[in-house]
Length: 130
Image (cartoon, rainbow, N blue to C red; front, side, top):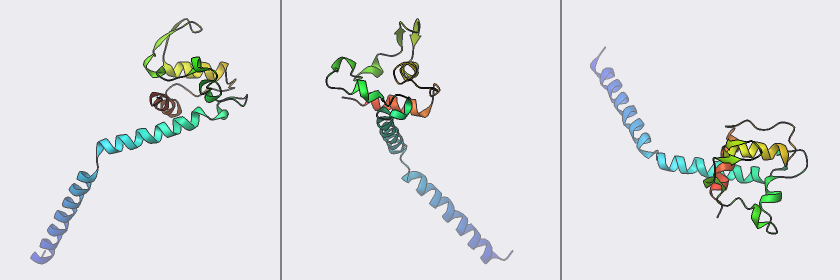
């Protein structure tokens, strides 16, 4: 191979490596994490108000975002789980409580499984309540 094409090929390869390195520097892992959490919290806020989780035209916000029932507020709830649940007869996680409420209060025919991204989004939303 003549020297010129080889030099041009080496120059192209070097430029590609520099471009890749610069692109990697521009990515900010902390920003990526913040953006992902903000998007999930926004999805969780929508889920909190979504009456499609059950069959009785109610949502989490029907009871838990009611100024007339401050005792049902979920502010700080993420710090209180896992904990013992009398109905379950054992210590449960917050997501297990979500499923319990979806079955009992929202009358869901089918519940979201534990670990579902929607439950994680709801947890993030609740963590942000002030």
